[in-house]
Image (cartoon, rainbow, N blue to C red; front, side, top):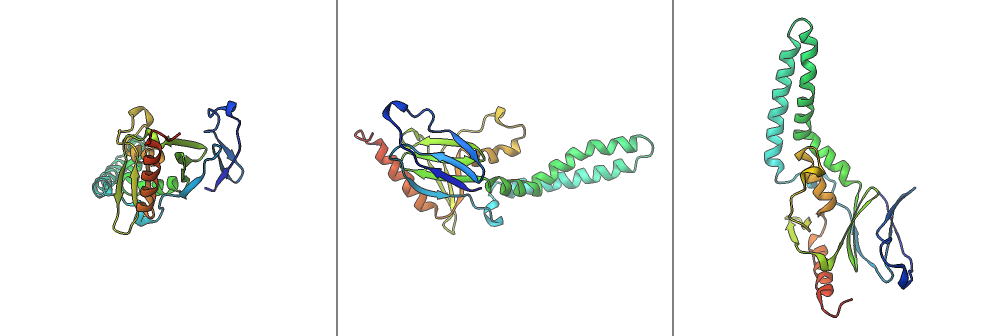
Length: 212
């Protein structure tokens, strides 16, 4: 996804209610900046296969693989049943095969597909995450939680919220981590220390009583 950043000048009476809107454009997504706001950093989550693997996958992938193999065995047994039931029964096994394939391998394909459509932008006033035509905006002075998880190669993840994703936000718990990457964290970014330092510096600046 290509990110197109647009600057503009606004009058004092205009307010900021319409400044957060993101409009889909032919070649990317446009972000409107406030008057005086400047870009500090832009990046995207890592999409290499090394970055796609998370610690939680160590447990989820084997369980998904066992579920997938069990579903295949059940499907093979259902296909061997004679008569009309041998034609109908295998249909019930297809959703379980799909779920097992997603849990074992498909989660990485889905994660990579989503990350290629995410862009991260730090400005002098906000922490922005752009996903397709959706904009998630945080202001530094409103941050109540901040956590850094660093890898040995200098990459890492920055979390902005520890709250679990509400159940109404997704239909399968497997998509929980995908929602978090879109709305609650900067996932698998290079040089996480430098980005962390930028966020901390702006956070301290906006916490000062004299900051406007």
